[in-house]
Length: 608
Image (cartoon, rainbow, N blue to C red; front, top):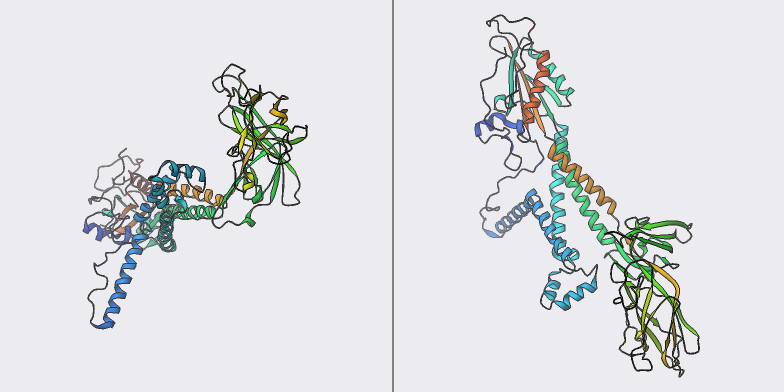
């Protein structure tokens, strides 16, 4: 039979830990005193000590007394503010505020991404527009208040991690604390009596614990062991990964660049500022940081679902490119698809949009060609109903020989429903029945004033609309190969059979994205380690009892209460008990000689 200590566990132990988030001991002062430092340093959380209400105390008379008192006050308040800033509580509050601050950046138009929508919002909201502008809500991520939260969070994390890291390194280099005086105060406890000598029991326990990957050593009459350091490692890894992510995000925002370019089949692009249709960059970005490369759009392929509920959905959506890196790089071929960009160094080229560019030829009254180009049209719906403008700015003279400019507003549909079958809306995104609807203007396009214009819209403020012989507005729907004659010998415009396609590419360069990804992955692993790994300590004490028989005591203490700790202690006790079994009670009734002595169960474990 095994003998069991009569002491009972009153609750989780480890009250040797100072006040804070890592208190492990029983709330009873006596138990805390008994356990001593056994429950201390199971985590690297900074210790918060009570601070007096007045840091400087009483002030001595005279200037010297005032200076000394002021210095003590300033130093005391500075230390108090630093402790608050580097506490986990404040770090979580700042992280929450950062999340809240990012919400306006998602809901309100941002000047860095879409200045036109910002202006539209201001025009539509006469009260909210100026208010949002003063609060910096149109440029959240570069605003003063968002930057302040960001920097404070950064400082808080660093101030929290650095001392915890050095403290954890010190714990790794040190030994687990010795066994408390009364092991019965710990949450997991078991005991039995054995015929083996105390030294022999301690050697057995040391071997068993090391075999289970505990860091163990013998100390006078007991063996101390500890395991689960990956918990604090994961905790530190999580916070370091957060810093890496913050640095990567800030680095990417400061040095990023992003631009768009619409390219018609057969045309090309060179990565220089003048080649972009739209370009924006971070505050520290330099044009010298642009990755040197160029590419040509050879062909765009788009096929669409013909039947079923997904009719019109793209099945094939890809751009065939030839590209070269640097000024004299070898030309290569590649295919760019949605979410499959062309990657050149830190730069990625994404395929973002597609449309059609009908080719038109404009002639003057003498039949001279004054314009012959593929004109991109902007899609307005899922079936690629498109609108655009054709601008003839140079080389045209009217029937009287006067130099003028021509402009045509157009609507293009790749699949026309047919005359009398509805308005000018496409029925399908593929080129099944292309039609180009035009009406024309003559006069001044306004481009000579030097003011920027939208290339897809006409400024008709200084233009007159062409009218036919009946005085009605001149307009026509043209099939490929058809021509619309302009009145009074003003010339003609032909919708050529060569209909090209265009693709829009977004060229992004954002350094630090790989670091941000690595930080996110490391944060997940670190958080998993800190949540699912338990740091715990085990003590084995072997002493000679009053009757000369060796008394073995085993106890365990964890970072937090867990049912697994008593179970683990029971498994360890079983391994030690195999080599130092319970000594039979000589006064007990005779039993079967072959019967195995029972293994002592750890208090707190589930009964089998």
